[in-house]
Length: 107
Image (cartoon, rainbow, N blue to C red; front, side):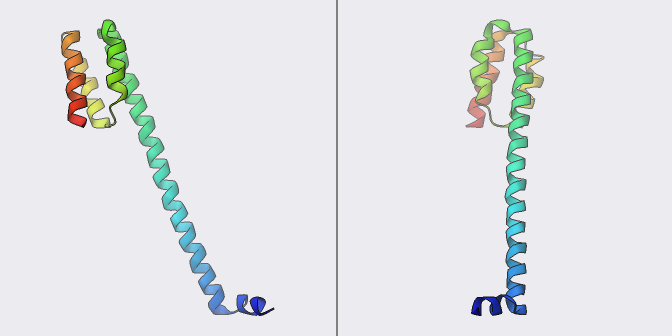
């Protein structure tokens, strides 16, 4: 009964509203962060697939080797740079060296 009386007071109602608002804000922030992480992972995967397609087209003999290197890259700017470079590098050996250098740069 005392609980019921307290719950109906203006002070209790105000605290309840503030708590709900804070909880909602925290939930939104966590949801946005999770959404950003999902979007980043999707973009990484798209760029990895594009890079592997360029390698597959230009240097099919090193595709298997390159795949391991490409999958370990976690930076979209490095992947984008590699996509561009792979279109101009003349040999498979130089292509593999670019991948190895990129992995070292990332570490």
